[in-house]
Amino acid sequence: MKTTTIVLACLLTASAARAQDARLRGVLDAETLAKVTRLTDSARVESLPVEPLVGVALEGAQRHASGARITKAVQDYLGALRGARAALGSDASVAEIASGAGVLLSGVNGDVLRQLRTASPNRSLTVPLVVLADLIARGVPKDTAARAIAAAARANARDDDYSALRRFVEQDIIAGASPAAAAMLRVRSITGVPPADEPVP
Amino acid sequence: MTDGDFERLYERAGAALRAPAPDEDAARDRLVKRIHAESLRSTTRRGNAFLPWWAALAAAAIAFAAGLGTGRATTSSRSSTAAPVASGAAADAAQRPIEFVFVAPAARNVSLVGDFNGWDASATPMRRTDGRTTWSVAVQLPAGRHVYAFVVDGDAWVADPQAPLAPEQWYGQRNSVVVVAASGDRRS
Image 1 (cartoon, each protein chain N blue to C red):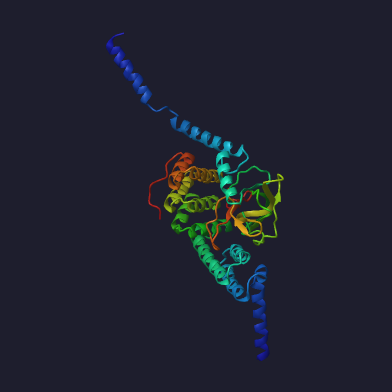
Image 2 (cartoon, one colour):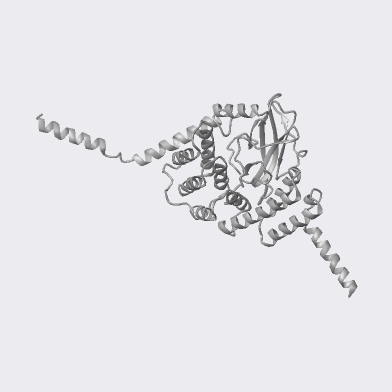
């Protein structure tokens, strides 16, 4: 009985070691490594992307962040990945889920992601979501940014259009325009129609 | 021609001018597309993927004043579409060469860090490409969304001033995003 217990314990330990990412083992302390590994294991069980979580932990280690901060970052990102996958659907790509998580972390409601998926069921949302998050990061109000991207999606904008929208808004802001006005003006010039005035979720 | 004839003629001419041209919508669409295409050409013709020359100069001046620099990520062909696309979260095994460019004349060394190299500042050093101000490096990236930054002189982490900003600020500073498109993939 005692031998069996020891063998089982060894097997469990070996299994846990295998689950740990080799890249994390050398840069995280034991406690942080254990906590981060539990989170990445959860992601794996839920079929969520693990690489973005490992990336956040590695970035924290390279920036000399504390173990608590690294664990919190991975935990928060895991929550955002869950929310993005729930909103975008189970067939969303890894890049879409990661981009969607970024949008949720910007404070945008998950219903915006659902609307975008409905408007563009067969197109990748990676670039639109990256641009949406960028607009918000540059000071465009969340609702305005969401409305602009939704209008572009309804107009069947291509990835190049979204990239152009981002560039033009950025240069308008540098030139002194208000971020909100720049976003509304530029999306209209790209889609040819003003963004709809319906409330943003 | 009587006064009545003139009045009728004026009315018909006015009505004709007020009426929309048969293909007005199509013409407006064509015009918008042409303006859009011209705007894109005017930015890429000057070799800058994101900004017109005056805005790039302003951004560069601000960055230089801060002792940092300006940069961009492009495909190695320098086609400079610079769509926000690519990284370690890749679903596509095929890799594409992406060139990262950063202007930092005062820097002693610059390296590229991102989720594709474990954020290791020693993994991907950049080289001066014009002998003075510009640093660049080309890396193979799988399709997907990649997050990255430049590290100047070993300790200053700087987002790419010409790329989309990453919304996540886990450790107090923003990074940049590049998206590498998957060839023939419906969703990347």
